[in-house]
Image 1 (cartoon, rainbow, N blue to C red):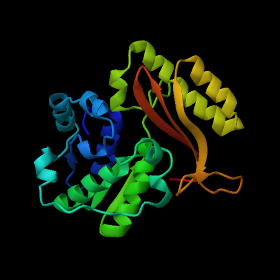
Image 2 (cartoon, rainbow, N blue to C red):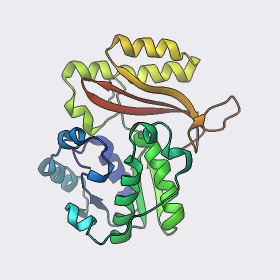
Image 3 (cartoon, rainbow, N blue to C red):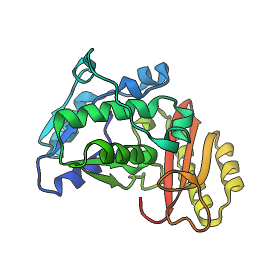
Length: 246
């Protein structure tokens, strides 16, 4: 959705490594915002974005407007997401994944990519895309790329970070520290205390098992600490793999 940073460029780098033409789409998708104020405040930096993509050697950029992707006669897309639509991001952002499925189904249908690249910072979205690809686009290969982080604080790179103050960016680095506490010692209470002391309002902080993001057990093969919360009015999400691969 634009406001590009090193995390997005890591996706480009992985795509270019395949030796095929690389296309980047930029579209702030209104269908996946359940908060109008969040949509209005989402950073839009198209000119710097295009310069970054040009420097990165991208072959083409697709810049649709809403009417390009959502013509008036476009049929709705239904995809059964199971528990993914009811827990964590599905619970706290009702309708969000319906919007993700709608825009990606349209983009994949129009652009016909061979490979698609997504960042693991949006873990639950990656799992939703996997369901969409399996159900409707068996010819597409999906690549989930590890989260890129600030080298000093460990903060996951995100377009929303641009809305934080310099002090807020330092405080937000404690999100990664808190997830490490949970991953290492299952110290959820200590992690929650750390975040609250930094003024971070916790929406969720839990260890889950993949692929359905249910509560993890000692025998779960794939486990991830997931986080969402607010700092300075900005909603931040992150995750940390503790066992297995995504």
